[in-house]
View 1: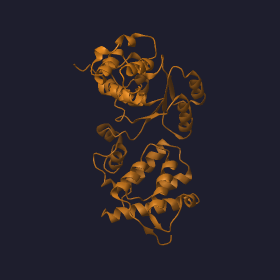
View 2: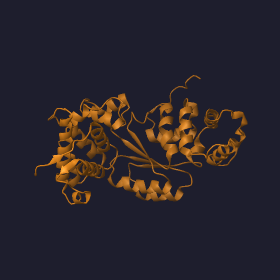
View 3: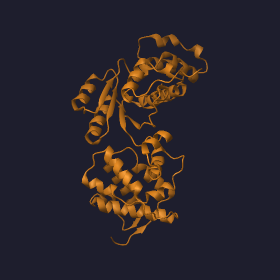
View 4: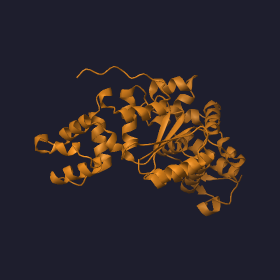
Length: 337
């Protein structure tokens, strides 16, 4: 390879790149994107545009990105280790999670100084970076995940329709007795039932892990579409009634509204007893209180704050969690008020 000139990555840029490489994304997509961004942003000579890099073989892209990262670490005074345990473990993990072609394997077979990067990672970093550090320090990665709630290695994927499920399922899991991060459960909010089907089709083509699909009651057509391609290791659950908000126990909703509003006595709580979909009722309550429009994401976070114990788990929420956990965990005793 011809002599090159590099603008070093900063510490922050190295950590961002390492985080992007270890996120739960398909290997080929994330590695090519990160490596090409590094090359176009930090290779001064020769200078390449992304369109030119698209014509390069994967070995060349890998070699250029590797040189830039390792040079940048050296500029920060980080020792150039020849210990590639983390690299091998990343290679093994990516291959255990995704179906990876021979070309993409070349991207994984790199000599990035991950041991050096690990020295830059603090205990306050995001989960995947703390997991990256654990790859070079822990013998049993599953136990390390359980001990430190690392989320990685991922063992199961949940695809749901919206942000409410993504926010509340892990919170309900905690009072149920099953922490999602400790058990490697990864949730993807697809953004609607049609997107759930699209996401499932994409993931089932290259993902080796089991997938749990959660759909609202009105998604019968989407259920058939998923079932058409359902793998033996996957499962679909369709809600018995309405949307996920309809599964929330009334006491939890009332407590959340009391937390959100200064004077709950001014609210018509009897509205919650009607057969109208819960979201419609909440929209009306927020409207009559003269606040901004009801937003699912904000309300889900308010509910999350107000979850106390297993009495906040409706029967159907428990059934969903039973499916996700395969009944491995027993419900904890109710926490005293």
